[in-house]
Length: 318
Image (cartoon, rainbow, N blue to C red; front, side, top):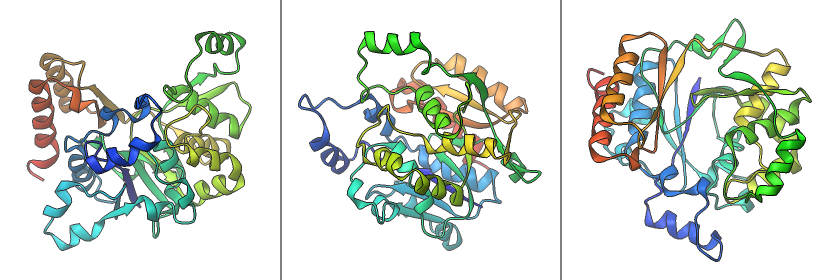
C-alpha cells in the first residue's frame, strides 16, 4: 500500500507569480488559497519521516506538487529511501486533463489522485500538516476486508430551508469561503439521499484508486466542474468524502474512532497548553496522528516548541 501527500510551498515567488493572473481585480487571495494554507515550515519532512518510522508497511510515498521539490528531498542519500519517495508534478497528475492547469485548489488536485502512475489500488492520503506519532498497524486503515473510516454521523444542513435563507441573506461569496461541512454534504448527496453524512476528521484517509476513477468517470461533468475551479468553490466535491460515503453505501467500510488525531491550532495555543496536549498524547494510547494547522502563524516561541516536539517524536531515535 502506498501513501500520497499533497504539498506546495506557498512562499515560492514562482508559485505566487503563477497564481497572480487568476486573482480578482482587487488581487485579493481567496481564503482557501491564503498564504497560511500553503506556507512551508518544514512540515513535509516530518510528515514523510513519520510514515517511514511509524507505518513501515507503506511502500512508496508520492508527494504531489507543482514544479517544486521539498528542501529535505535533496538531502536524502539513502538510495532505497530515495527510491520510495517520488515527486509527482501536477502536469503528470493531470495527464489528459491539462486544460484545468494551473490550479491552486486542493479539491481539484485530490479529484485526480487516481491518475498517479503506478499508485497502489488502496492507498493512504494525507496533507503535509498531518503526521503519524506512534506505531500504526495496517489494520488501522483496513481490517476484516473493510476500509476503516473515522468520523461522526451528522445531520445535513444544506437542504434545510432556514440554512438556504441564511446563506442568501448573508450573501456569502461562494469562492472566498467554502465550509468543510458543505463540501462533505455535497459529496454525500451524490451517493445517497440520506439526511445524515459522515463528518470526517483531519487525519490520514484510506482511498481506493479504482473506485475513485470510477466515480470520476461516472460523474464526468460534475468532476469537470470540480477540477476547473482555480480556487475552492461551493459547487465542488471532495473526493475523500465522496469515497467514504460510497464505501459505506456499498458496505465496504466501517467507522472506528479508536485511533484519534491530536489537533493543534498553532497560532491559538500557548506553550502551556501545547505542553499539556503533548504530554497527554505521549502518555496516553489514543492519539495516533497529529494535525498542526497554521504553524507559520504561530508565535516564534510556540513554533519552535512544536517543531522541537515533532523532532523528538518523529526524527530522534528513528
